[in-house]
Length: 573
Image 1 (cartoon, rainbow, N blue to C red):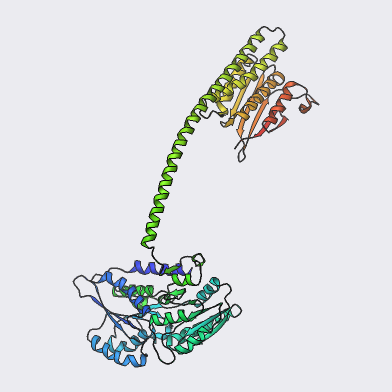
Image 2: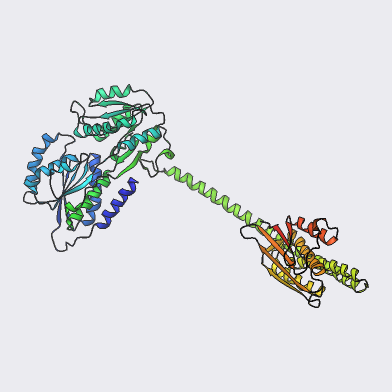
């Protein structure tokens, strides 16, 4: 969440900087005061962030940079000489805005302000000790605090090393080192029951080396600051970090991005580039006419998770264990020989895929030929079955015409209707592009037309009405469905409305379920009193229950202004 707020701050800053109209006017002067020296990586990173912004306004802004060098020399020694230098250079050439990096430069700028640049606004960054009282009531000052987050790094250490037994804290006697130690002491009580803390503070290099080498395995080091030892010896950036990494028998963590190098594993660190970039953006806003007093100090530091790849490898920390969005430093680039290997692997893979594609293409062609032959064969089968059933239907019709007993005639007509229902199914399958499924709506329409003619429904005063939803059935469901439909209509015409009346059919999918429902209702008197259809011995009723079982369905009978058969059956997936 904190990172999202910082991104929002950055977006506001970048979008809110207008291009100030300075055409034809001399460029505005920006004086940048750095607390430390060129080559001190934290300062170099801040300067890089500032340059990335100012270089886009070289026609409008002229930048002067001065380095106070207070990391190598104490402020009491350095400032008197530096004060005279700034006075001679800027008393008669005052800047339009002053930008400072880190604490010493801010203190120095506030002290010199009335004497050298009384009207220049001040923008600071990288300030550890920020509190409004630090400005001594000065107006026209704003900036970005360096608010590093110690608990986030401690939590990270405990997460990456679940069996961590102790944390050795290294810090020097510089003002920064003592402040960082004090910040740690404010939060250390939160971890009293989680890990042991060992303090290696304000040692000489030799003393620290001896104590580090004597540390047992299973711990980690938190480097707060070690640039000047107790004897006054100043260590360079590389000397300090390399010394700690080579001496400590355990991984080292830190709170600043520039220290993630030379063997330091990493941490949730303050971002020097972003500090400088934000400060330069604020300076441009002020040069464009915005008052520094109207810009609140940004107390939330733009921090990120930084890690040194070689150190991760050294201590066996897997990349997947790192927090999401982590930044990896010093990750090796792929060598030429690795690229050659990847190239030949890609060639082999591409060749294999090409061979496989050709084989699959030929197989697909063969399968298409086989499928086409199968389709022709299945169509021929459906066609012949339909023709044979039509022959059977015609023979039954001829036999019916030679019958004199009405009961025999009705029996043969029922058989012919059943045969015709199956013949229609095979005819629909023969005409269907799928060869395995039929659409219920056109099938029912043809079947009803045949039944109306076969049973002379219009001449007998029987009206057949239907509501059929169009869905498909496979062959295994379509044949028992058609036969069941014939039996229910036949029973309705024979027993329900033999003297005339109405038969209503409805078939549809059940909403929200993989089922269908078939309802056949007539306007007749219904079953006689005491009649149980499940115990009926008639062939028609036994056939109805047999066909319902073939559909894996169920049937209910309801007597309500006539007799209604309600059949529910599952539909295939």
